[in-house]
Each structure stands twice: as C-alpha cells, then as structure tokens.
Length: 250
Image (tube, rainbow, N blue to C red; front, side, top):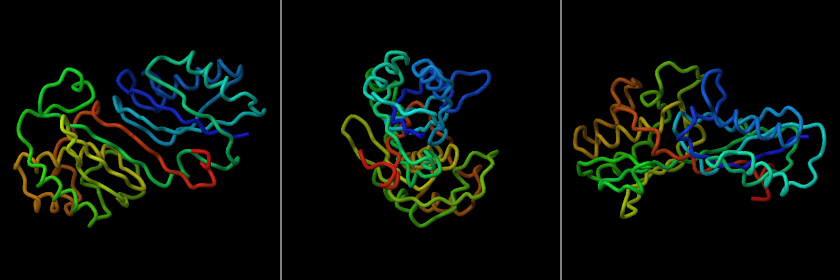
C-alpha cells in the first residue's frame, strides 16, 4: 500500500532533503521516525530535492508498506513526538499504488524574502540588503521570464538534466511592508534556479544591470552571465500541486 505524507521543515540544520552518507538530511530523519513508529524499515520518496538551508512549508513524500495503517491521526501524533522540532508532519493519506510524490507533481511554488532594514526577527529567514532596490524595475524584469522556456542561465553548471526548459506559471514581487517577497511557480525548476533568478533580479534592482540586460542574460543560456545565487536561508518551498485524483482531501 502507498501513502502520501504532507510535511514541513526548517532547512537550517540540514544538508537539504536528500539523504547523504556524511551529512544530516531531512529524508534521513523522516525515514528514521517512520521506521521507529511502524516497527518496519521505511524509505520515503520525496517530491524533489531542496538545497542545504532551504525551507519547506508544504512538502510531500510517499512510502510503501505491506499493511494498512489504521489510526493515522495517532501515527501523526507519534511521529511528531519522535521527530525533531524543526520537522513536522501535517497529514498522511492513502493513494493509488502508482501515485508518485515526485513524478506526479504538476507545479511547485517558491517564495524568497528580502529585507532592507535590519530586523532581528526576520534576519534568519530573509536576505538583508542595505542598498535601496528599485522594485518597479525588478517587476518589469520579472515579467520577461514568461517570454522564455530555456533557463540554463540560471541553472547550476554541473547538473544532469535532460532539458533546461521550464514553464513558468507565475512570477512577481510583493511589498509586504517590512520585507519583499518574490513568488514563482513553474512546472519544474533547475538546481539553484530560483536563487539565481532572484540574485539577477536584485542586480536589476540595484541598477547594476538593465531590464534589457536581464533579457539578454536569459537568451545567452550561460550561467556566467547571470548574477550570484542569493543565500539559501531566505528560500521557502511553499506548495506542490498534484492532480485531483491524488490529492482530493486537501
């Protein structure tokens, strides 16, 4: 039988989602907690990688087990007791045996946060930039993302992917008063893509490159032309969408 898990985590203390031989990962903690609670070896499959330090407010994974799970609310309670305080399970529900947390996802949404005034309550999960940013120019450049499919310019250089094409569904900045929020949704993302896009848009906001330069950077399909990747601690994976036949109870 196959079950989906909805969870959230702070990535501060972890080397990303995916388990690694010499570093602590979120997946490793989840595997250990489920194996303890269910008294059988469980290996969860995540919806995708998140890099070291990146957070997830709504993440999904799945696992297989030979017997039906009876009291899911009690299981969730027990798991949250076992897990560290920076990982939480919100839901567990049965799905079709062929449903897949990674391959069936139809979109993912990320938020990135920027602050321009030092704030001790936001600095741990926002990127602090002292210089003024031209938000209007950043919005103008952001709209150009919809004109493109190939985002190799914003991809980690040494990465094994079959294509650099992504379909962006939404991308915009919001002024929240005490911080700026960048929101982007796409059918898929390349490694480091969001952080590289934000880093390059910030270059536009600082008037170091023009809106036209931003467009040309995308067209160049060369990572060396884009801005630096902004820090991971301000990036949040906030949603993963699935077809209704998989997630009908959310």
